Image (cartoon, rainbow, N blue to C red; front, side, top):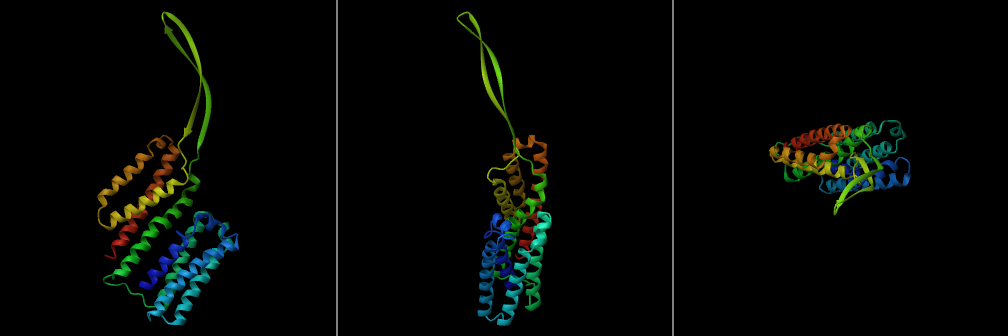
Length: 264
C-alpha cells in the first residue's frame, strides 16, 4: 500500500502543482515542454522506486518494470495527438483515469497490495496527501473544462447622458446641465483566475471539515462564498453557472473527505 500511495502522490504532484495549465496545453505541440514534464515524473518515480529497492521491498527487475511501464505509458498518453480530437473535458478525464489505472494496475500486479486493518502513520500521511490533491487540484482542473461552454463573459458598455438640475440662489432660478458618463457591467468574469483559487481553498476546507467530522461548519463556508458573489447573482446565466460549479465542487470535496476518514 505504501508503494502504491507514494507513486500516486508523485503522479499527482508532477501533473498538477509542478505542471502549469500552459505546460499542459503546450506539451502536445512542443517536445521540449513534454520532455521537461516527463523529467519531473521520471525523477519522482525513480526516487520512490529507489527508496523501496534500498529497503529491500522491491527487486531491481520489478522496480525497472514498474518505472518503465509508468513513464512509457505516460509519454504515449501525454504526447498522443488523439487528445486534440476530443472535447477538452473528455480528454482530461480519460487521460487522468488511464494514468491512474495503469499505475495502480502495474503495482498491484507485481507487488502485494493489501488493505491494512490499521493504517501506519506513513500510510496515513500519504493517503491524506493523495486525496487532498485529488480534491483540490485534480477535481478543480477537471471541473473547469466541463463548465467552460457555460461560462459567461464580461459585458461592459459605456454611455453618456445629460442631466439637468434646477438651482435657486438668492431668489434667482437657473437651470444647469451636466454631461455624465455611465457604465453598465455584467458581473460575469473572474479577475486573474481568482475563482480557481477560491474553489481550491473551499474544497480543501470542506475536505478537512469532513475528515474531522465537523460537517456542520460547511454551511458557513458555502454562505461566505455566496456572499462574496452576491452582486453577480443578478446575472441569471452566471448564477446558474456558479450553482452547478459549486455543487460539483462541494460533492467532490465531500467524497474525498469521506475517503480520507477510511484511514483513521
